[in-house]
Length: 390
Image (cartoon, one colour):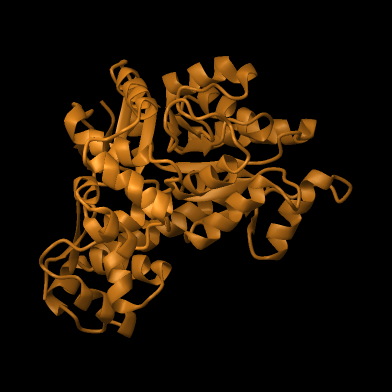
């Protein structure tokens, strides 16, 4: 069994009754992650959401059609189509190696809790512990050059040799070569899908789907049976960057999904790396643009590892100072740290609630929470934070 931070990862034993409210809300027509997250912020649990009547949901800003459907489901009135969809989910979950984790589960990846609009639920096929291991995202063109393919495989193998797994999107091209390189290097690899977890897309990737599930994990926020839709792929990119400690762009056009992933990474406070290429290669122009805008130019894997070592040294130094910080309490806290600390009480409070109370943006709040946690002033619990030192 793989461990993280010295603690074993034990696989969840499903209470299907407890998962049912999550699944019902996720199958509401027109439901999306931002709305689901907003309702969770207001009502705390899916059970509370389903207990609301139509008017309460309208007051919470839910549009008429969704409010009507949610209130009817809460009264036990759901369609034959939804019953069939729920049965499909439960049948999938009964298969060995298949998991469903919610934002309120202890198995939910901690890195994702800090991103804007985290997925309320994740379907996982494979090794659940893969989501808790150090990962680097690798993204790039679906139609790369021969050199781009070689670079993707080479860097993935080298990252694996240095204990870093690879997360990507299992698309043709750079994604596929990155997964292949990580597996060849004997390290975990995670694929974030733009379809339901039970849909193999593109179909030609069937063998690699099986290989990723065996050597790491397939992950999707979309319900089983969800087909490939154009809008799903940019949406899943925030999870690729959110699960990673940095994003490496191998080859990418200026207008591409890889650039969307890089933008998400910057918004999430992740490091962005880019491999330069020939000025005559249109698939290198996105990388050149990123480098011009401040991404780190990468020529060998040590360029990435150097950045990781600097981060590790900083975290070690902060950890050493934790004991002193506990004694000094609120001394030397900046104004944002003070505001966030004051918003965290001895009862667990969510990041969204802290944002509402402090009127700070999500990034500033999450950075402050990490700092306060390192100082030993707050503790992460379930899906929120609680104060442990005055």
